[in-house]
Image (cartoon, rainbow, N blue to C red; front, side, top):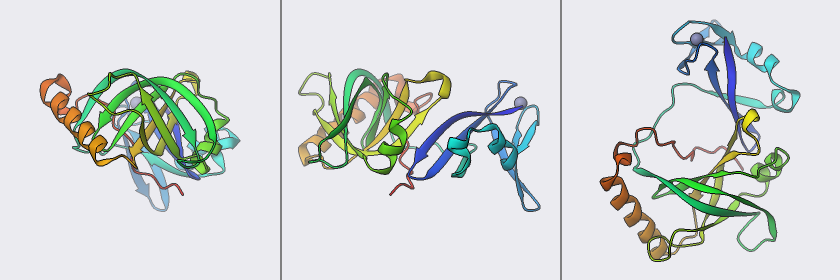
Amino acid sequence: MLKIASYSLRGQVVRVKLKCACGNSRIFEVRENETLVYFCSKCRSRKTLEELKKDASSYWRGRSWIIECESDQRAQPRVRTDFAAELTIKASRYSPTYCVLHGRCMVLSETGMLIVVADFRESYFQDITSAYRFGEVTISKPAGELPSPLTGRIVGVRFRPDELPQCRIGITFEGLSKEATEMVRRYVQEHSQAGPADTGEGVPRIDTTTSGP
Ligand SMILES: [Zn+2]
């Protein structure tokens, strides 16, 4: 049976990932007449968009949905990392702080990073995705290897309901100095050549496809 694996909110649009109770997570989308239908590639169990929406709470149901099927992994080099990160969220660089979240930077690429925070609240969603899109990340990595803080735009907020207060937050760098950009680029190149993360295999992608405001 198809189930909702996770939600992420970008602006007013909800992106929904599906999984199947059989353990498979490869889902196809098929248009039958005028109806969108989603299939498990393994056991062929199916649901329509309407049926999926019936399973969702009213918080999600009233919004526009994009169902993520076979994901388009892009070829951009990215490295798996694991260092402590503090994420300060604001409306813009010089605005007052909306909240400060704590977690770990798990993926780094030349253009962005993925942070898994450990103290998220569902009530932050609406505010962050509509108004507070500026993120300032202080990382524990020793100076000299990577600049800190790193700044950028919050482009993805993704959680699994049963994993809260853990939440994955994607950031696309913006407003970095030329030197900082160069440091990040060098770090990613050096580490993606040296390590098993070379192929990007198993390294989660940083969501940069935003339809937000
Ligand atoms: Zn299945």
